[in-house]
Image 1: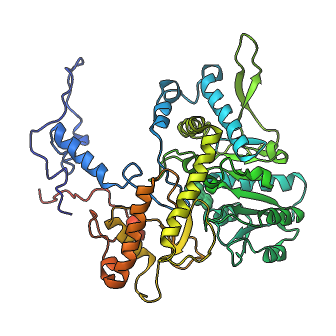
Image 2 (image 1 turned 90 degrees about the horizontal axis):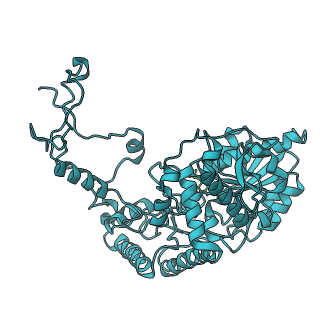
Length: 488
Ligand SMILES: *Cc1c(COP(=O)(O)O)cnc(C)c1O
């Protein structure tokens, strides 16, 4: 790290701020607040602007290049979403404002509930959960409440296919259920023979991602749902992969009882870096009464002179409130904008192009990278990041080397059922040129792996920091590399 820090750039007496003339009597700062061990850097405005602009450009971002993180759907976020989310009527409302003063916000929330119901085929939708994982929690709490409401207390297990995202077993376990894994079959579907074996009257439900995390549409999905329903369980749909289904098939029509949406994946609200997500949950008619409170409803129908009056309602058997106020409102505005800008035809195209792009990329790579399940993929696919003739090269090395080619690495080592997994999701927003460039990089890396493997083992070479201990880097964050000189 040779870059000078903002402290080293500091020059005594230089300043970048000009305070307005004081209109109150001046008084000295209390000396207890003036810490000699905490010198503030003294810089001009341009120094500060350059410093932070430089820092911002060290981060890889979707506005800077392709971001093929499988399972995460890092698609481009259209800037019109930001314009609407920043409209003062949305951005400046306070969550404690009386309902009659926020009718526009409530109308947007109501319409978004209606659109999500229509898109996924459910009877009602809550916008409250703050992320997909919290949506799962809501779904499992609803499963619990549903069985309890029928005095069916013997159900203690939730079935989770082995291709599931880690949040599914985590949610089930933290909700007090025993997690029972269900294996996949040779085509990457849920193994229905094994499923039948574990389905008994202790099963509360199954959590199923479809398309699953292998990027494959479960060919037995109707049978899987039927088997669980016949055992008296409910089927939870993990909707993180809805990007492949928009306008083509509706999970509610397939028989799913509950599903979460990830607005930050399917409907292009920004995510990553811990930013706010949004995980609305849709339910079939028999579960509407259990939804979290409050829901947005029309309290008084419109008349010739008056628009409808919107307000909050509490479902009669609600599991309660799961988030302060009304969910991540700014994300709701962005998702609503995205849905309205595309319309039904546009949303279908989103999925068609997402699937086309993934299959195009797969067709360019499958001769070089092993594809464990040889099927047409949906919006993403998983290959093995390793070769038998170069046993020292691992998926991690390929991921790191991609950074030298100026691409964000794909998801790696997930799903767990693929050896040295590289999980690639190009999304619909990439052009043929960018897909070709990405494929070329992966093909070049495959060649290097065989001719010059050390290049991969030492990668990345061109990034501000090299290969980190990723666990340590996440758990022991060092946010400022400058340390005060204690001798002074
Ligand atoms: C992203 C994801 C989740 C979790 O969603 P968050 O919004 O990140 O909490 C769950 N399941 C799958 C398959 C996912 O891809």
